[in-house]
Image 1: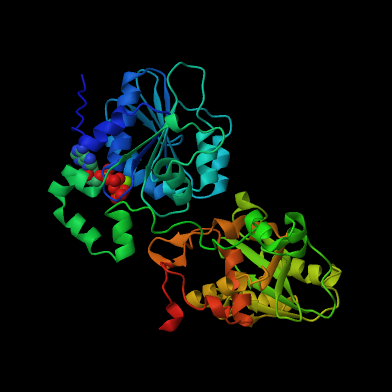
Image 2 (image 1 turned 60 degrees about the horizontal axis):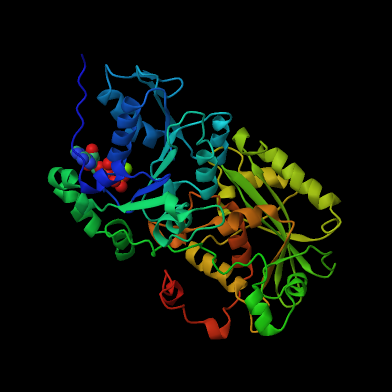
Amino acid sequence: MTELRIAQPNDKQRKMLEAATKHVGFGGARGGGKSWAVRTKAKLLALRYPGIKLLIVRRTYPELINNHVQILRAELLGVAQYNDKDKLLRFPNGSTIHFMYCARDGDLDRLQGVEYDVIFLDEATQLSEYQMKTITACLRGVNSFPKRIYYTCNPGGQGHGYIKRIFIDRRYEAGEDAADYTFIQSLVTDNKALMASQPDYIKQLEALPEKLRRAWLEGDWDIFEGQFFEEFRVAPDPARCAQAGIDVEQARIHGFWTHVIPAFDPPQEWKLYRSFDWGYSKPFSCAWWAVDFDGRIYRILELYGCTRTPNEGVKWTPDEVFRRIRQTEETHPWLRGRRIEGVADPAIWDQSGGESIAETAERYRVYFSPGDHKRIPGWMQCHYRLQFDENGVPMMYVFDTCKAFLRTVPQLIYDPLRPEDLDTSLEDHVADEWRYLCMARPIAPKAEQNEPQAGHPWGNPLAD
Ligand SMILES: Nc1ncnc2c1ncn2[C@@H]1O[C@H](COP(=O)(O)OP(=O)(O)OP(=O)(O)O)[C@@H](O)[C@H]1O
Ligand SMILES: [Mg+2]
């Protein structure tokens, strides 16, 4: 008979293994023994309860294979059978552990019609709130086994805000019950096994830049707080409107204390721009902007799509992209017959793969000048554009029809490795072409807001 030995958990891992609420958060720092706890809990549950279905999720396929599949397969050799095609470990008692990665929303399609009794989201903060909610919606089933979701996490990553809300700040929304949530913090210093086997690991964490050290060694969640463009407003703030004595609906229509306004016909006299970011394996983004006589920019139209992977939307070749841009400019009443100045990611002039993207564009009479791609000054320009003056009027607006901007820009967060920049693993193509446009028409920050706000993550990079 095969004997399965499981090492002793440390005190924090024991708490995680014993936790009995529907949602269990674990970790909050690097090296706390999180992935070990996930594998151990999954094994114990599968062995103890016949016929239950477990799911272990990581963001990428290599992480999933290296952190879980290979280790569990080896540990359970002779105990459970692994089916590589289905990414499934099957136990003799009928229980299963399924492995899944979720690098993009399209990966969620594989979840259709499946149900699980227990779900483990390892490195949950690497997933978006939408992805976490879509995956955990599969937690259901007719058996009487209690349903449970485990989230292991480090501060940083696209799910940071959501995980922080439910486990650290414990701010619950309608339909969420505080009693369903347990969080057990585990730091590297709690992981006695790692401290003994790799004493250098903690030295590596101690040597990190301060923000990152505080986040990953000490488990501080306030470092990459919130969104990258936290000042972006999709609707006027009622308190601000009340203070200014404006009705909220009137404020929305006229663009006070908001960046998003109902679309209108831009006057023929306003200058037009086109900004463009090419996605080699990711979506491309193209937008048209109008500029009023005060230099204020209005994002009036956009074309956003995917050039490679079919499950992320439309699959267009470069020719198709520029044919559509040309067609839009020839037919749309706001653009037809107008002079349009183009600015684009300088990488589109790269000729290493044969004809450059810029050359393809020219064949469709779509012309660009190379944008200035300095990132930090570029983001500062975007921030300056969003500042409201004393009357609540910003230097840029987005028409409420520009769905790609409204969907992707508010989701952007700080890059955990370079907290002064945004996390480029997210959908940042709209933000990138917006940045090129802002750099093509740079403005000065509002005088009274010249000083960086206290505690602003990047201090004042322009002062260097
Ligand atoms: N109770 C334990 N007994 C023996 N080894 C353990 C135990 N807990 C963790 N380890 C080992 O410590 C190391 C780090 O643990 P683990 O990978 O689970 O940490 P983690 O919190 O997931 O780290 P990261 O933040 O880097 O993902 C691994 O080699 C793991 O096998
Ligand atoms: Mg881990």
